[in-house]
Image (cartoon, rainbow, N blue to C red):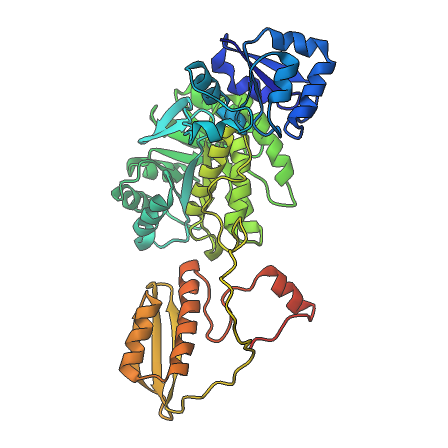
Length: 501
């Protein structure tokens, strides 16, 4: 049985790419329209009927598969072509699965996309492996794109191991140990040993000098990160199984450095064309990444320049950068959690890359795929609560507890919420409790002090806010909102904001 895959001019290249393994089983038939998914089956049937060359091509196949996003039942096309017509998948990357399903005797539907007929289909990425850094297999070209997280030089030596463990649990596959800001070769060696003790599968180290490179390699690093300027100083130190991350904005210098390394027998080379700074050279740098593939080495996508410079929540920035990294065929994605706003950027990047890689495998956008990157938004409107007749309540004057007052604090370093009750007028602490569960903290303090109902309600409200602040890593200020959406901030600046009650 021969299957005819109907597509458009714009999608033909992608269809040919995903159908490459189906040679001899499919024929790709292009309809002269820019985008076919906007058409209905009735319109598509009229186009085919009006073009003899299309009818002739379709007559050579046994079964016709149209894109799953075409609207309507395929019956009008069957009448024009005289062939069975089924809907394929909505996402191009699922075409091979749909065709094999059909060829093996499975059924597809005239009205429903193939995904609804076949059920869940898992697409496995099987990249060509260029080499290993430690125990980590580096793809010649992504996806998948592996996360590399830098231990920033500003991290104290005593915290290096705990930071490395956190990065690894958040999704890092390779740890890059930074050596700037006055980190000595001896300190770099101790940092690498601390990372190695965590069981990190891949370890690289910055090598701004020959002494740093020697200290790093002697301490157990699987490779170094350096520039073409420093390469000549360290070449004789590099064993043949060492990896080198070579970064520069000039592709000519990267090519020369790559040639030099290969001459010396070092084949594990990753090139970093350096992602530019927003509004300075970001757009220009995208072109460098496209051109860098001709050098024939895996690429590192350096996200830190953008995430640190854009004044917005980094998880959304990572979502866009991950899509770029996957589209550009990067193999590694560098995260630097340099400032507080970037904390847990490794987890954000890992999820963004998972989402982008799955979408790429499907040859679709990430829209509609399951994502953990929603924090302050969600993709669907919240459900309406059941209707109950209720009295409207506006501002209600509180009854003041003249016996004492409550303080609520968030200790981010220890990961706990603390509730304190101070007796008036002495301000002495009568009771203090702490923990991570707001309900339990409230119950414990209420039972110790015997709070009246209104004061207990106030405590519950503040503990709920404190819990949100603790989980999101935000500053908690008692009696103030924890999260203020952009549109409320804009109204406040413009004088249209409402006063809190």
